Image 1: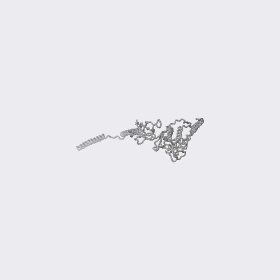
Image 2: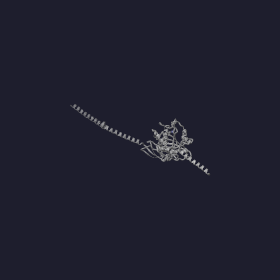
Image 3: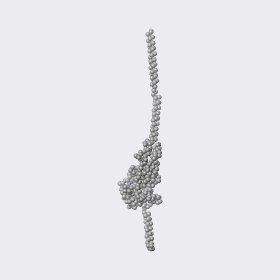
Image 4: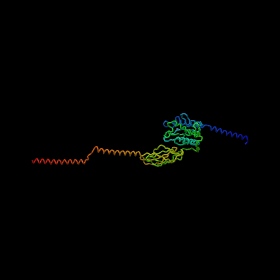
Length: 425
Ligand SMILES: [Zn+2]
């Protein structure tokens, strides 16, 4: 290589390195762009329960989330809509694209058809890096939810009949190349979740701050104002899946019960439930005392290792009704609301201890009452109505009659003697 040529090559190389460093610096200084999408708006009310409507409460959470997130350095935050307007899902994704968003967070509250479900869930795109990023964020979000006391319904994918993301916002954001998640904070229509959002707007704002904290942790942000630094926060490395990550479409494969003991006094049965779902995890169980005709409210299932790994054996106490034959059965639900019913265990009627005690008390009262009555009768007979026995009366009457007959004879004898003596004279 000639000397001039070598110099040109060196200048070119230095130029490239300088450009790369400057370019990197510029990129590093570029603010993080977060788009928050408050679900629903305008004519689209979303879920409605009592005086709570999603299109009204989602923006309260979204504004609190934005306000909190803006306290972190190097982040620009937008809401897809500030006003109560109808905005198509496609337009929301397009808005995020226009703002060059690094991530879109779509905020919702949930409701269930039978008003039986409770807990928080995060829906993530089903494929590629969108799945990995969504999932890694959702893990942090779910930790925040469970720390708050909410029950985790999981981090899930959902597909439509074309095998695309079921939720439009995830579908369109993926098409626009923007990572996204849909957060269902809790269920409006379930008593277990109502304390987390009702009666105080501050609770909704707390949800917003919680969402912001999850974002700050995921993007390893720091805030001088809040005095927090998440620079080293451990965000999971989620492997990019090769294909579509499908929701679990099959029921739990194991659901069996054994009755360990029945407490005749309390009417409670100690039951061991064994349940397993190899594809996902067990989320809830419910029990039936009439062979599955009707079931109890859903109960939480222990998942001590991680929210997506359920314990196989669950020892529970089930209250049984008294004075009736019982056909005990259990139903378990996986994280995708697919369910399996157990075998039936027959239990003989258990006598209601309260009823037995009441009956005993009543019998004792009645016996006491009878005793009292007979005592009163005896006293009454002795004091008020001294009765004569018929036999002595009869004997007395006969004696009296005999006496009268005897006297009559004597008198008749005397009269006859008198008459005789008069005739002699
Ligand atoms: Zn909604």
